Image 1: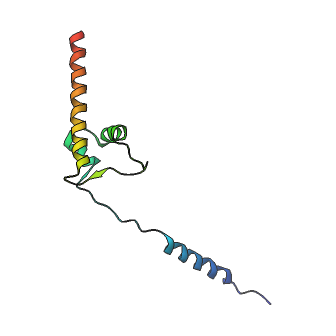
Image 2: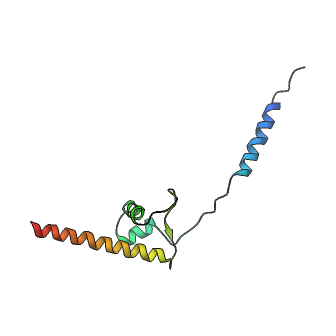
Image 3: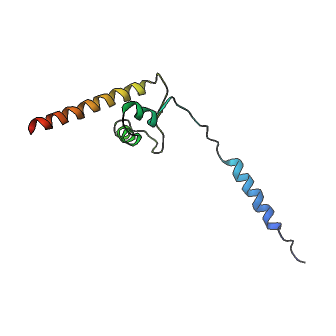
Length: 100
């Protein structure tokens, strides 16, 4: 007796639909502020801000995104730390000019 063509394909198809149902749905989280909007507020690039955040506000998840809502205490800390960072760098620039 000859086997029917396609009999093996049905089992593969059934497996692929089972795989699709097992995938996790990730809900998209929206924030009032992200690195792009905050960088614009600070007058810098999102890349420079992300480098600053990685150094001063590390996250557990390497692939996590930075985002804050209005009133978030961490947002206030980030703004304060950025302001202090800018002050320190401008002071060091002034000191270099005095040496010349």
